Length: 303
Image 1 (cartoon, rainbow, N blue to C red):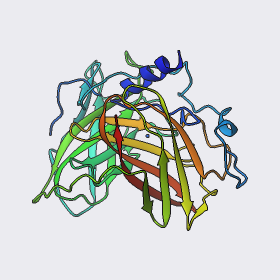
Image 2 (image 1 turned 180 degrees about the horizontal axis):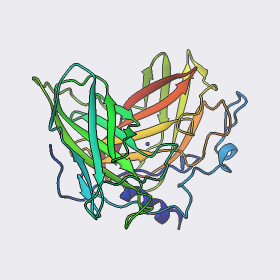
Image 3 (image 1 turned 60 degrees about the horizontal axis):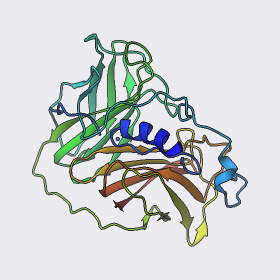
């Protein structure tokens, strides 16, 4: 059953939601389990891109492991980082490694959406989102070049798939907390909304997903009231969607299952989303135009 297949993938990605095109469509830890188109300028349809499956997103893809609150270890794999605190207000290199069940640093990773590692940092009040693709040294040490951070408690996420060992082919999302120096004033979570603006673009979301149920969601991008049809490929798709749950900061990686099939996409991006739990989720949609990456954020209430 299609919903069952989606559920396996989604729950394993730390509360991640699997988007299949037509939007099938991205210290201290804890010891708990992890919950992280028509392309010629005309308005696309869901079926226009249905034939281009994303790597690793078909029904034969490895099932991801983990469900629940964020954790720094799962299935014998551990997210290790020396820094428990980081400075505020300045760029910082965050170094970490992934240790395998044998106790050794993992150095072989499968490519997911063009990258071997997707790294995220977000403040505990769900502000300050950063999505990076760190570089790995031969010894398995990863370096993520974080932009300046504001004071407070942050959580970092490493999303990856081992390409060797006992966990080969199993998608994992591991997470750790890190404190940033200075006084922290939490910002209130913005109210749930169906539209938001970024860099002159308006992003509108349609759909009312319910927890644990696959549900269609559509994102439309416009500018000055006109449809945007020049979305450029980013990580092999026309948009990258990540969500974090208010409170426990569960991670959901929502991304199209179809790869970008040309140099122009939009204005509609269809997702088939499934969230593992109800409540407020802070969504971060990343899309690219004219070589510039835009990040739009909005709060979605999942019933």
